[in-house]
Image 1 (cartoon, rainbow, N blue to C red):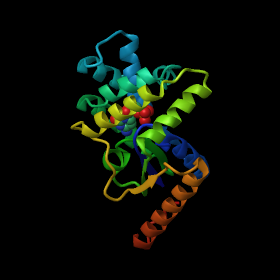
Image 2 (tube, rainbow, N blue to C red):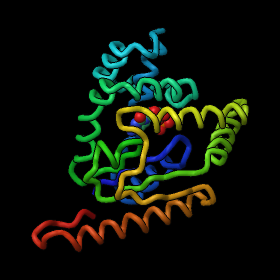
Image 3 (cartoon, helix red, strand yellow):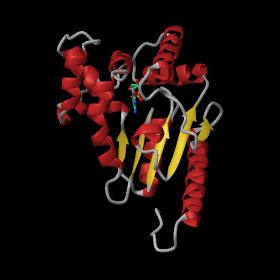
Image 4 (spheres, rainbow, N blue to C red):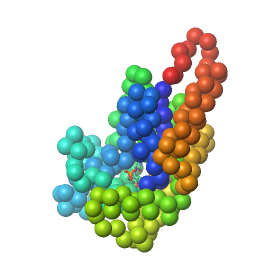
Length: 221
Ligand code: C5P
């Protein structure tokens, strides 16, 4: 079974994807970490973030060390990731890895921005997870404070809105729900409530595709 989870920054999609992967016993890929790793490499090398040659080269040669860089999750890296992710060559270089991950035996859970639209349009279940920008900014600020870091609420909200705009307005694989994605607004939902809602969507999608499948094909679950 392939589960595609897309949505904007701090919508809760990563937490949801991890919980679903654990629940269904599936491997999980946080596709944002690939773009973050490309960005991190450029930042580390002191390269210009708009240098497409350097960015494509990094995307083609990512290593485990890049993916476990301790600064992968910080704000600077997230911002830089949204710049390199708008480059068609970077997206093309990372496409095959993501598709292969999704199609491993038994399937997988992938979260990102274009999983349901570009990486796996054939996914068994697609969720588009959203939340109001102010709610996402508050979650982000709480997360930073919990880690002992300082957080400027207004600046975080501005950054989230700028990243949403950049991700939604880019020419390649813009952030948008797939036509057959189920929208899940987590603005007023706890993690547990979002998880329950997501499971209900997945189970109904899987039963529906089982009902439509010819009798000789095995079920996804
Ligand atoms: O989800 P996360 O905040 O880790 O993603 C960082 C950035 O990577 C996003 O702002 C987006 O620009 C980019 N991204 C993308 N496509 C994906 C996942 C992430 O363009 N599938």
